[in-house]
Amino acid sequence: MDIRLRVWRQAGPSDKGRMVTYDVKDISPDASFLEMLDVLNERLIVDGDEPIAFDHDCREGICGMCGMMINGVAHGPLKATTTCQLHMRHFNDGDTIDVEPWRAAAFPVVRDLVVDRSAFDSIIQAGGYITAPTGTAPDAHATPVPKVDADAAFEAATCIGCGACVAACPNGSAMLFTAAKVGHLGLLPQGQPERDSRVVGMVAAQDEAGFGGCTNAGECTTVCPKGIPLTLIGRLNSDYRKAATGRRG
Ligand code: SF4
Ligand code: FES
Image (cartoon, rainbow, N blue to C red; front, side):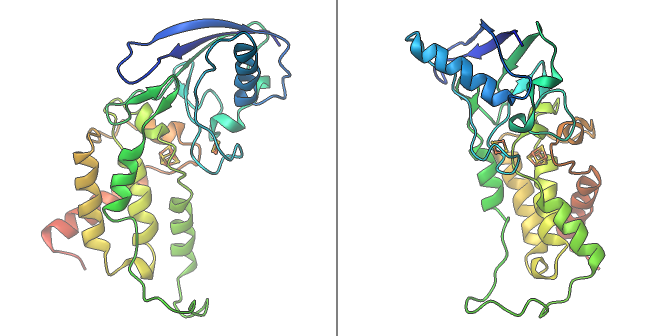
């Protein structure tokens, strides 16, 4: 496949940045999107040019490091798919593809396609944990968890923290991410002691980090590679209301 790429190049946080056009030739349809960028980067290095900076790690859809706007869509055109799991066969020979970093106030661009997502860390630090006694691991059946709760908690726990939900949201809101983390722990017995302080703390951290408010646009769940459902945001709102008013139960 021959592809024309228009890629956002930005030398650093204070650089203005611009789109640069590259022609990439003879790409296998079975190459992943990141492998296609690797091929381009190898050529740029051989030519003495700066390679395109982009985040990646596992390349199997589980770490949440990769992520870029591909033709204006977070993670590209394939539903429930991370950028590293997107293959070139989903494009057409001769296509022109625009590639940009996440665009969100709380995710400043570091370089090219790399953004600083440490704002997510501040939300996790505000409550994304449980307190448990140290010592040997308890027996697996020591704390019974109803199957329906275990399944719902597992679904929430599949959030990989990629940030696509923020990039897709017209308000730059992190609500789907926060709701996944609040829901994951709040659905389990082990998460009950800190349930109220967790939701209040994580929502406050989200606001402090500069994420926008949620207006139920729903764009987040559409691009989420793990299919985190909007119902978790409803659950967060309910939890938050009960925690803030002391009316749980
Ligand atoms: S909710 Fe989905 S889109 Fe948002 S960070 Fe988690 S996995 Fe990524
Ligand atoms: S590189 Fe790990 S999810 Fe894409």
